[in-house]
Image (tube, rainbow, N blue to C red; front, side, top):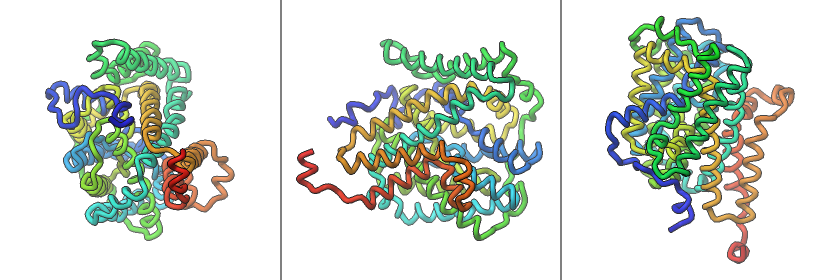
Length: 441
């Protein structure tokens, strides 16, 4: 038995397990509640000047697109995957939308999505993965994802906006603390089935209850929201195509795909399901189709969510049926603003409190994959430099960023893109040590 097999968390239900539908729906809802699908469209929509009605629709389509893309990937890859909005292209989308309008923004997303479909159909990406994205590189990407998401989680918990620093900090820390206790009890107790299944919901409920008692957690929007709204393609008008923005977003899509590939490695690691060439090619095709549908209906690029993959070791359930239910719930939210309002009304600090614990599982998963790989001096350099580059984006001086060309600014805004690109380049360029030196090591 390999070291990776011995360190892989034991699952109560694998990807092919037929978990009961009530349990699948509850766990699928848990995955949806643990996502932050509404945060990126809210931030982006507000920054590009969308009015209230258009902003509501923009957020609604984020759920709809994520649900459709999730169902596509579950069907094509046969793996438990949840798709969510990618933060990698946020800087570029903000620039395009604020200067050229949302019609140009959505138009810039369509050619890149079609390119991703062609990449999956050509079966070229699987060859690229086999040559360059080794399990160690995948582990590096996962580790960087976890590390670079920590500031988002921590800043969300201690944000002084909304109802104030005290309420946010207390409710967020309560959610994190309950999640931590549930996680500890899962391995400390022999019978902790309920905690395995519902630890995230328990934590969200505890944090929301604390926020409610302190005056936060306003659910008045739920009563005001309508029950049904039909998604419509080209809601924001006919897309406009600008060559420069289309090329920019096509390049950024490649990094979003690499980000998604990191999620595939997480799922391979926690489930034991092999990431075959067929699955990679089908996943690339599903990635492109999901993003094309997202752009046509007026939403942002989607990616495999490592945070939801990180929930699998916590719940011990990897059944695809659960993830199909999550996709169906996301689609339903896209049709029903009232149901979506329930999710949006959860305090952001509480969601980020749970999300902080998910970051821990991602960092652990990345370290576990790296540790299970054959390791020499060359690999040490790749890991060290790549993590350094990824983490450096979090502390890069603003004035130095502003002095860089616009295209480089968008690239530097993503720690996953920078660290992942560094890992890939080093994997291609660094010479391998002599065989006898490797054997001696």
